[in-house]
Every structure is written in structure tokens, then in C-alpha cells.
Length: 171
Figure 1 (spheres, rainbow, N blue to C red):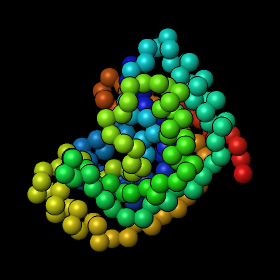
Figure 2 (figure 1 turned 45 degrees about the horizontal axis):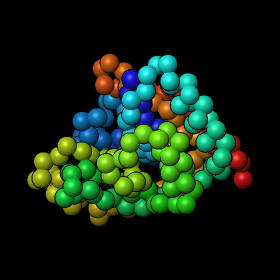
Figure 3 (figure 1 turned 90 degrees about the vertical axis):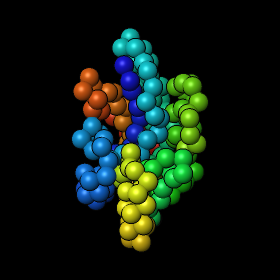
Figure 4 (figure 1 turned 135 degrees about the vertical axis):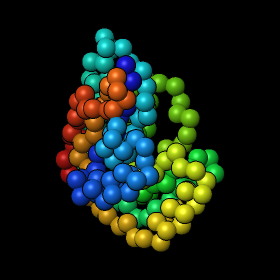
């Protein structure tokens, strides 16, 4: 089975992001807006309990932290993805590094760039038009993150929560 680890932002931020995703992201109906901590990886049903146990331990090692967004950016020319930039913090980076280290899966294809996708699989012209108009808008937002989620992929391609982990070291 395919699994992934994500942070879901608040409903308010999800609503803002979805106002763009429904037009520009073909995965809109498959998964809510999210920040990926560990991209899709394979785990057998027999081993998923061990993964969940590791994630529970990791959650206990970290404080809740602030998630800040500031602007629109893009991964072009690597790929035509437009995203809401999440400001990198030590807390977010440490959480992502520990999750990926403990689950010791193969190295990610890309470096960790904290973001929430607004649009993907766009043609070059679509990307240029949409990015040109969105990057002029302000997307300043800040909220407290106190949990992350282990998701699994269903047969229809959609993702659903397997387990939620609360960050355990309250400030």
C-alpha cells in the first residue's frame, strides 16, 4: 500500500488554497491541501503498525510550531507546479528530517521545499499566465501546527487519514 505523511493546514487556509486548486490542480478531488513531510512510499499492511509507532514516537519529540505562508512560487523549469510558499523553520525542517530518517526509505527525488500546491500538470502557457497573475497577490498567513497525519492511498487514487499524531512537547 502507498502511504505518505502530511500536515493539513487550517480550514481557512484550505479554503483559500482550494479556490485555486479546483481550477489548476487535477489532484484537487484526491487529497485536501497539504504540506508533504514524506512523499508516497510503499508499506505492507503487516508493517504499517511499526510505521505508526515510529511516527508516534517522533511526534513526542517535537513542539507545536508556527506555519507561515508569504507568497506564490513555482518549481519551473523543473516542473510546472505553482505553490504557496511555506516559510522554512528549524522546527518544520527537524520534523521532516526525523520522519524521513526514521522511516529510512529511499532518498527523495527532490530537496525538501515546504509548500502547499495550488496548481500542477499545467502547460507552459497555462503556467506562465497563472503564475504571472498569482505572484502579484499577497498570501500572508500564520497558524499553529500541532499535528501531522499518516495517509494511505485508496484504489481510486484518493488519500485518506490512517492515523493522526499530535506533537507532544507543548510549549
